[in-house]
Length: 331
Image (cartoon, rainbow, N blue to C red; front, side, top):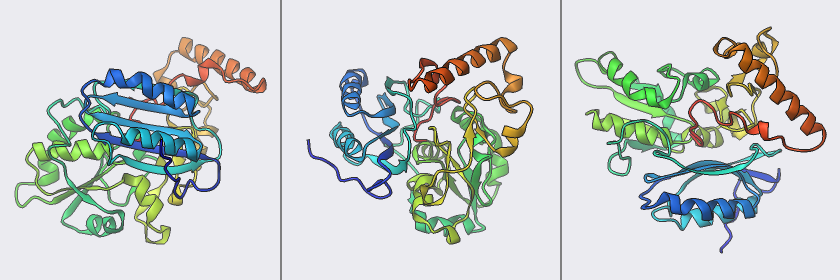
């Protein structure tokens, strides 16, 4: 197997590389692909999650640059995956607890079976051209991510649909279409997400709904933060990522948020200072969503994890709730 050279910002240090990847492709039998992919990832010492479906592959994985190069070579050899979309970043510690390869109905859940990004999709906009597009007064900008992600950071002037799941996006757009687009000449619609995959589906959805001038940020927020200088950036805040780094900033540097290990939401300093915050048990956002019995269970799990960490072991409870909120992986 040919080895793919690792690229900046994963080369040469720190030693762990994180690859956020996806590709809409046609897989005749994704279940048959699961075992070989799981075995290879295990042999390479990779951790993270890969999702397989008839519509393609999506995931975020971490390991040494060499191991990431090997698995990317393998995935690019799968049907219609030569042009796999990959964003690389780095991590000083392993951001995942284990390796999972799962077969799903969709690689990112929208709940609109007629949508096919391979057939029709919005116009890609390079990160270097994004500022001009979203600064145009004839453009409306929509953040397609979930509300807990938007709260951490978003582009200046972007509309927040305030959805709790990507599955909610079609209903939100249909209910808000008249207010968004008006009755006269339709504005341009620019949409963005973390790595690009949700925008592949959301722009395809808008095209199917009859919206013509639809654009999306190529490579997503990750590529923008990697390539656009901070002094030229229209991004405000940090970007939530679905791993133990929690958030990242410009240059893909690790951010300042921590994670609630009960609900998997990002926590700022004020959240950590709240009386409703208890490490591993609750935070201000989820305290009212859980029963006392659930919190007692989380409390015991956290105790076992702490004891296991002191012994230098990984406790099985550590994987509880990983990638919560309807797992969307690289995006």
